[in-house]
Each structure stands twice: as structure tokens, then as C-alpha cells.
Length: 212
Image 1 (spheres, rainbow, N blue to C red):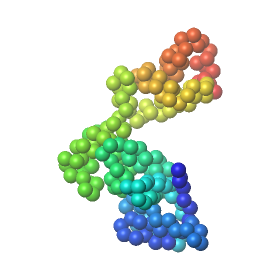
Image 2: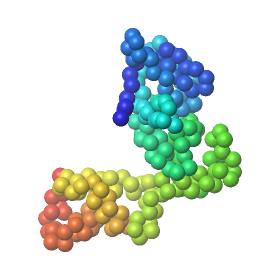
Image 3: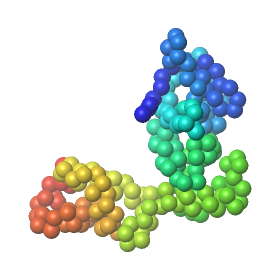
Image 4: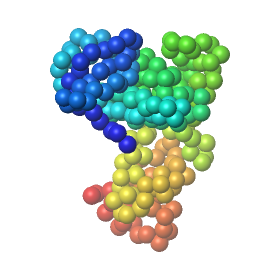
């Protein structure tokens, strides 16, 4: 998949179509979030820039390219477009108004009315959109616990520890979500996961992993 495009910003056609020249003969039309238009127009016209991009085939007829200046925005855009009621245009509109942190805050604190700030989103659609986003940002464990953002760091660190032992990413995530509790520290979470993988693992193994 096309991941990144570098070139010279030639122009921005309303409302948000950026033209990027990558060499003498190739020009790319890239759809960018609306909140980037002024920034790029004022600072990057006729200058070199690069964008993290996502190409999407539209109706088996043509390819649209969506571009972002941050890798995290690209990843969130991809996740948003996997949701059943969110296509690429709506995903781009969401990222034109909200950052990833903003969207997470909206979901965690049920600020449904905030979603109406997105062009084309009324109160009823905001309710449906919230339910979609809830499934993306609030992934419950098997015990029904919603993992708060501050605990996600511990989960990621625990995942890295376990993968360093040779366990696969998918099986690690599955086990961590099975054993996770809100009071877990990195130490206790890794210990519980290792016991789940193999009850015969010794205490020395826990210490070795956590001290690496």
C-alpha cells in the first residue's frame, strides 16, 4: 500500500485538494483535513513537504488519496474507515475538526453533542456516530472493564515484554485483555499473563522479563 509521498506543494484547490509534484512528470491530488488547508497554504506553497497517505478505490472507477502530516492521523483514519457507518469522507471530516485525543474524550465523557460540530452531522446522526466510535475507543476486556487511556500505556509495555519472549502479537493481546484488572501494575499484569500462557513458568522468568 502507498504509505508516504514527498514532493513540492504546488497549489490547494477548494476546499481541500492539495496538488503535490513528486518529480518533473508526476503530480498527485491529495485530499487533506480542512484544518490543514490554511497552515499549508501559508507555509508550504512551492516548498517541499511529505504526507502520510491512504489510497482508496472509489466505486471501482478511480483512486482517491487522503493525506496527513502525522502518522497517528493516518492510522486513526484507517481505523475510522473500518467502521460500518463511517466512510472516508466522514472520517476526513472528523479529523478536520477533532484530534485523536478529542475523539477519545468525546467517547469517554459521552459528549455526543460535540460531534454535531462536524459538517453534515445532526443530533440524530451524532447519536449513531457515537455508538460507532464507542466500539473503536472503548474496547472492553472479557471482564467487561473499559480500559482508561492512562492504563493503555501499561498494556503496551506488557505486550512488548511478552513479545520479547517470542509470543505472537495477537495471542498476547487476547491474554492481556482476559487477565487485565484496573488495579494492575506492569509487574502484576505481566505475571498474570505469563501464568496464563504457562502455569509452570517460574518466578525468575517474571523478574528476567521485567528487568530487561
